[in-house]
Length: 266
Image (cartoon, rainbow, N blue to C red; front, side, top):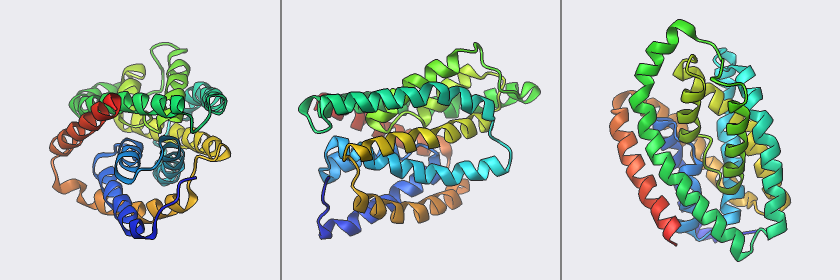
């Protein structure tokens, strides 16, 4: 388990605040931002950064899911189909990490390279979501229902995301929304986001607890990040109406692509 020097505590809380604000502004998952920051900025080992961030994501996503569930935005049939693939894949990936060795050079190299690729595709997907959301919204308003193009696609996609999220804590955000818009062409984009958020809660919680079992969660680090991120999300959501979403997504996507390339080249 990683240890955090006392002098870094304020910096970690501030990082949680800033990333929480970005989540509130853009909706892009914290894993895309928090995991590379912990690895590159604070020197946390890749496995511990992923494990800690998975539980961080489960906590932050739970509040958003609860709000959407109470407003009846979540298509639970779609969530169940995604979880049917994601949860078994998460468990198998956790077992594979244990077999390889959570702190082995092979595992750390695998995490860095898969994380780098996931960040690069997240950057592209983030811009794609903004570009197509208006068109998709108008097309789905007439037939808003959770019927996939093919019954097997949600489960297969859930399994793929389960592997990626367990390895990197990235994938159930912008990438998930972009693919789900294609899988569920008759579901309004706002409800697609609700589905993506809802199935990510059990996925990140189970993956995070699996990493905790392997000793890959720094609980003190997690508490510091959560204490900063919750007010940050509140602040970002209040600023949402004052900024151009295409500009904020463009800046964020450029940053994510640059970090992704750096990790893949490491």
